[in-house]
Figure (cartoon, rainbow, N blue to C red):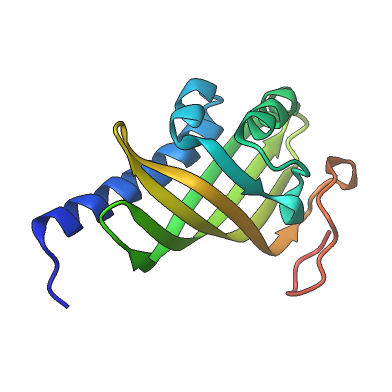
Amino acid sequence: MAYSLQDLSDREEIRELLVEWARAVDRNDFDAFDRCYTDDVRIDFRQIGYQGDTGAGHREFLEQSAPFFARMQHHITNLTFQEMTDTTARTSCMTYAATVMHDGTVFFIGAWYHDELRKTVDGWRISARVAEKVYDHNTPADLGVPANDVGTGES
């Protein structure tokens, strides 16, 4: 399939957006985090801890969680485009998140992010995001991450 310059530009902007989201979470840059979402974004992160469904609620959850962690690092990989129009897209990407607690404990979560995106006057934004957990390892029980029901990870 041959892509137009606009197609390539849109795909690159989406890649940058997904990486910016991860960077914003890792740096606790909640203004940058907000800029990654549309105002009406729907979130489903129940499999990895957040039980709400709004962007504002997800931000609040992350802001309240941030003091418990010394460092976080999200890797975004294997981006695939399932569907793309001039103004909408559906993608999936893998994430591998390592988190370091203040006592030095490190835990990991691997998941797929399934996204719906919309092109706005300010550029591409995530309008819906579902996290599908693949595994977790060494995750403290008091973080509220549901136990694995698939894979080989620990909970």
